[in-house]
Length: 445
Image 1: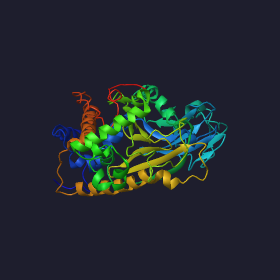
Image 2: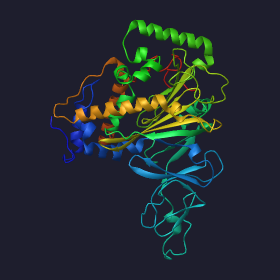
Image 3: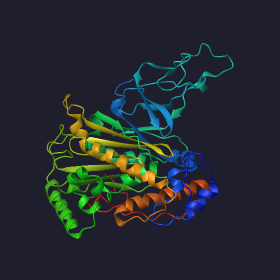
């Protein structure tokens, strides 16, 4: 197979369908899906507009007039709070409707959004404020900012590119808001944020994130801290029994109501995927810190540590991990065929000490993501070789394999306009959901 270079000729849509149709189930994809700009262009036109993305935490726009500039795929947007209500948050493309200038260069605060080019101003609700210089024949109402679909719930702000293509996000809000609030996300503040620009295709980044088969060789710190690696990183019957015993012991301490909390929706082109699961950290740890001891005050109204972690899936490309005393948000933003922004944000309770040790809070996921960046970039380098061929996924990579099957099926449907056979539903294993009840498809909080 010829290695792809930046000068590769684009392949047409029929060729992409042909590549999809020859995909072997439970094998990785062909080189073009990880490297070819033409396929990335197809994704940008067809697949990305159907995805809701986590773009911000509500504390970033705490009062009316605050606005932030953020990335939504390869578009730049403005997220602004226009009122005092919890969900009075809107988003606009960062494009002035006069002559297309970039409207806001950085985060800020003001009564209006003012373009630096000709000083045209816009209300926080998007309407054009400057009108005196308009020709008499131009309707000022038609020159409001280009709105970006936006939804806020549980302290999180989501946006999407195309309102006509996006799935309904309300089921996700209904399913997850309670869990997000119980973990304190609605009353949190940011203590650290880092961007791990990864020189690899976004699908390689996501494939790596969805499996822990690599955790033992690649993540010694993560492997030491997290008990679930007994079943997610190895296939060892004795260790599986050990992990089940830890789950049962944790269950006896926290009780049925807390143990059985969960949600699961696999999602498709018309349904936004989401999930919540709880599991013990293991080894008697209170939180996901180097020592296992607390690194901040408890969140979500808790009065004591329960030694658990709540995990959230927020669409295809956004996730959250909530220990009892801090939360980590994950955003995976495709930038090109061979570059992905991996942005991690750490949250603590808004009343946490001002001099909190941010390094102690970010320790585990920071060191783990740096390691992920290295192994994913090595993976991307190898895939660019003429020697690359798809390889088989192991049973410990079942969620990655399900993502690949789902992605290819959805891309084929979007290209051809014909819905194919439904991909067999992936069954969430116990290592993701401590409670079998919580793992049931469509279980709600």
